[in-house]
Length: 110
Image (tube, rainbow, N blue to C red; front, side):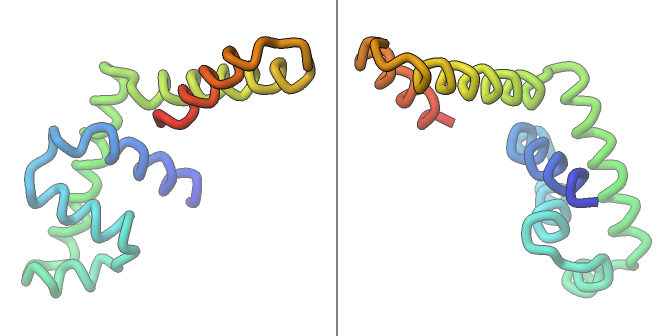
């Protein structure tokens, strides 16, 4: 469950601008603020089922966006490559300090 929550949080970060205001609100409350379906339903004066259906549809949309655009997958690959590069730089003391600073700058962009 934690893995799904983490994935949805990343997908939400990448694709939230493609969602409606209501979808953003529901997803933000559910995944970021840890509201229950009942609490969201009460907040918006709708049924718990309506909230559940909206969140499930939005999750499916986020997965579709990711399948087409691959922003999260590319982000993960960049993070992995940066970690590998940092490991190589740490092993080799003779590596130019300027290269180390460039890698650090790239890491701080994300």
